[in-house]
Length: 387
Image (cartoon, rainbow, N blue to C red; front, side, top):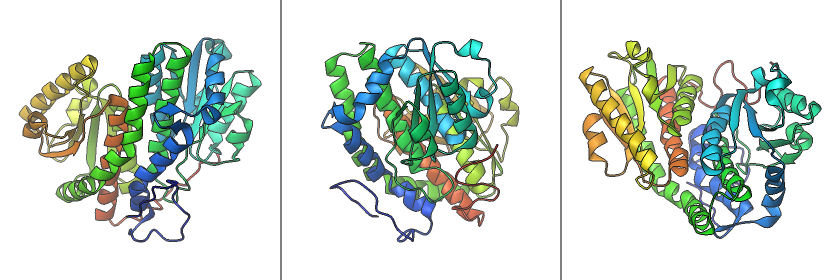
């Protein structure tokens, strides 16, 4: 593994070595790419004025609500952002498929600020959404990973991710970079709306600085665990991913990653919706991937966790096979699951970033088991340049 601490920037390369594939290399680069984001936007446990000022000024101009338009993994990042921004600042957020936003009536968008999220900054439907918003004189902000991309040039303000070039088609490091940017954006929205005190802000930013190191310490164990799990599930053709609250977008992302990487049918649902129809799919040969992490400092998170644990008990009675993502040391979840992969406990938005990575590794190893060129899945391109 390549570790760079001084500037936390991953240098360009023509080979994924020492890894077998770019996707695996890019998964392992995430401690460094997240550190690069922190270096860009933070100074110790404070936000950098020079790199955050434009975003803070943009937020001051948000009058009514924020509409997020995005596609694929970027839309899943937007779904998490919706919860973070609303919980931290109270600003209402709607998340639209970029391909649908283009055809929405402006009557529903009055006085809205529009954020677009795109790894490439060139995604056709997301670019069309940005241009529609610009024509309608909305304040626009783009989160992109490519400097001087079209979205970077055309948005009112850009809040770039610092993931570096991503060569594998499945998004890994670019996705977690988006999640971190959006958490920082949520904290900035709370500053502007005066809904967070200085002590809490300082504590949250301090926790962010610790994130890359915490991921680095766990990465190898996640890889080894998911390698074993993927072998156990090598014959499975269908998966259901389940999560509550902030973990639901991560469940959706996990399902998407498995579809595009391993050519397996997978669906992501809110845990509470399983019994409203999808439970009919629960059977031998359809594993449940259940996100059962918890932030014990948050009463709402504890309540959601307790509901997930009860659902796990119910699914055990149905003889479901369960792969759980749980907190380190959680014997209750481990006692209900067939396989448990552990994530160190932290604040819920940071948990969401961490638990994404074991799911990326599950997709990688399932793809390898199926003999798939995981860096270049069939029918897919890195940037969708035409609808």
